[in-house]
Length: 202
Image (cartoon, rainbow, N blue to C red; front, side, top):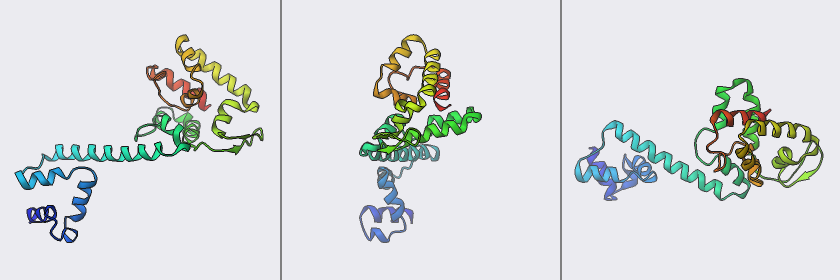
């Protein structure tokens, strides 16, 4: 019976009325349609564990590509895409598990990093900015003391050359402070990176 339904769909015989229509549609969506074709032609389906891995990987690839396209096509989310370029758990969310005492502050940092780039008025200094997140973290004069304390702590934490490299990033510095892992910081010791994030979050 299964063979009949699979063959019926492949031959496009009343396909939409087939009991397997939705199943096959999903297989096509995730680029898995070659497997039922192979089953019909060669009477072969992968073992359950292998098939499960193939399906999971295909779905992950499809969903991540769709997610990336959606972000890349929205200018207001360019920064978020640089901070969190893959469809997986945010690295700061993982950090909250290791450091529950800093959970609230780290979640605020996640929210700032995922906020769209938009014009707004700062509620602290009443100045208008075309990028309110950048203004709050890098520019607001009312927060100058707190900002300097944060930056000095980061400088003291980092190796000298790495500190120089990071603070020469210009616009990319904000993304690093919001947890982006770019070519400059990818090789940081995870413990050093974690402490740097705590300084920013606090």
